[in-house]
Image: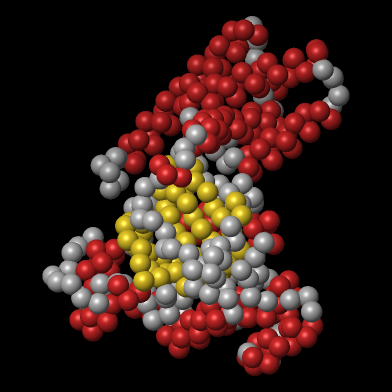
Length: 392
């Protein structure tokens, strides 16, 4: 309606058109058989026909034609040339259901998407890192220790829609890199790609100097790369004790967590979903203090939390940094994250527009990163906080 389309008129038009097509099809079917009665169409026949159309793809007219041909031709081909077993249609029906669960728009619609992914992968294979755009990553320490996490010229997106365009970020051990930017800049996509949940179209991901670009999230997690997703990284249906056991099989390690967080100890048999948002976030981060990961990627760790809980969360993140963990933090609260970050990177429309030490952050950069506006004059991050230039 907001686009100027009359919903009622469109629905009536489509309903009338579909009724006319159904009537025309009935006449053609009766003419072909020379006779037709009510027993020629059972409820089950209609349901199977509908299932075939939905599995093929109900959102495109051409897929409905494909579904009609499949429904009319495939049963005869199978019965004449494969088998006449009554179990085969049931098996095919189940497989169609699995295909629909994997591709909700239908298996026909998935063909073009998968073809695009293969084409993009082949195209990206011939692109070198030097072709990627964006600021150079922060230099490695003089000790020669490889970065805990390095993203080199990442290009990524969803089903053909590009989101990241050559993102380059380096996270060293014992360093907090804050990734700032407005909504839609690609921050969550960067986190998903770094954690292995999303395969990049081009570019490489290195963990401790090892190329893990083609490794999935499970292998990266076992290599020490953990993702704290947006929201709460817990299993709400499990108890506090069960959530901790997933990360800390050793009972002494869990007891150490309970000693640190008395509120969790008092309700260890309570389901995690019954906790407040702050307690759930503490539950997600508490096990990491006992076994610090090599890299922690946290997407909005302070989302929806009270100011007091936010302080506790950032204190935990600082402890992880002191333990040698490299942290990539995505935050909307610029002033809070600047209090703990060592390096700051601005992400704008899928590109890193600036990356440097926290001390070099200026108010105009913050304003431009979040609002797309240039500040009236140069300043520091402290100026931004005092003058209220940016308060996301």
